[in-house]
Amino acid sequence: MTDRILVLGGTTEARQLAGKLAAKYEVTLSLAGRTRDPVPQGVPVRVGGFGGVEGLAAYLRDNRIKLLIDGTHPYAANISANAAQAAQLTGVPAIALRRPPWEQNPGDRWTLVGNATEAAALLGTTPRKIFLALGRQELAPFEAAPQHAYLIRSVDPVEPPLAVPHATYIPARGPFSEVDDCALLKAHGIDVIVAKNSGGDATYGKIAAARQLGIEVFLIRRPSLPDLPSGADVEEVLRLADHVLTPGPGPEKRGV
Image 1 (tube, rainbow, N blue to C red):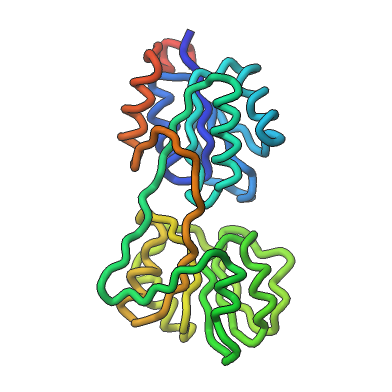
Image 2: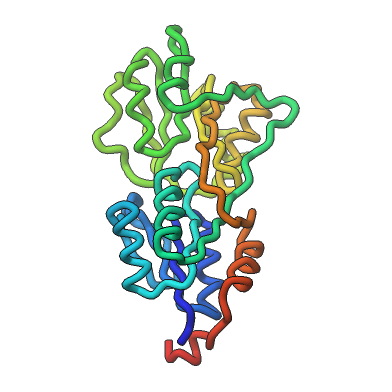
């Protein structure tokens, strides 16, 4: 029987990884369900939470999972912690795809902050034009700084809208290029960007554009994540998975 893998996803790399693993293994990709219309994944998908550590452990046991892969966003610290604990409880091997953070380059005007609340406080009392390059769940702290004008870009609508007098919403799905983000920042007269250090290429355009335009960036530090065997990209994690599992027949041999 082909070994079963559960990939905790939500990133482009996790989707790519699951697709490549499916050539040799039986793969399920788990999504939190925060995006209403996710891009096609190419493998069986499970949507929604597991119910904490015990719920995930039960899923691993009930579905005879042989390998758990944490391919979640670098800031999904709770999910990553639950994954590591569930793997320990069940004895299921766990590995992770850990996207490297961006490195500061000459010309970058970065201020590192612990969270969105700290960033909102550091914006100051003088009205400024702020690009909030954050998820919808991180926007609420900026309601405490209603003097600023906010530009918010998100895949899904922000509902309810931010309770501030000046906010502009742009529905868009990445990747975003440096050229496009440079034009966006200029068009809206942005003074400051608030962002996470997500790493990767898909959303780096705003960081490069900020460097080009001399715009300040408040960058939220990455959280601490469990110490799992990890790879920095899809190919590294594929090699790790092959070390743990014995490949079985491909989809064509399974009648898929």
